[in-house]
Length: 203
Image (tube, rainbow, N blue to C red; front, top):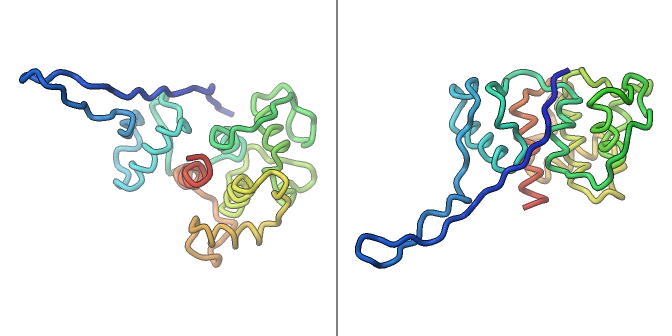
């Protein structure tokens, strides 16, 4: 399973520079600009999707050091957790404790999934037989569950999938509750929902 190392952005503002007339003029505040996307496979996306991905990059959710984002491909569950924790920023980090039988402490994803488990972001309904299913593609219902749980205070995250769906509709994150919750979502959809959470809770 491919994964990427964390990184951090620093967005710097600008001050004033002298004009040719000798008076000062304020430069454009570059900290408000959205960064350009470095991904070769995002050039054919709609303008709305590109702007969303730019917002995700500015929030520090995307890796600028890779050439391909694969926005229209499925998102494996473990890779989503890696992305998602960049937005949630868990307070506790500890080695893998062995909650799921299909992970080992030697896997890179294990510490990320442990952090998600400690934050009570993982719905037990999505982990039958004590399996996290790290390589399975993320479904819409699972995406909503992760996001709504993260939106709530940690002590209020023990909620079922149906309640998560209703709350996501109230927040405007989904249009209706009649969608197929077993539908596999794309990477772009997973990123978009994470951006909505980030903007709603952390900005």
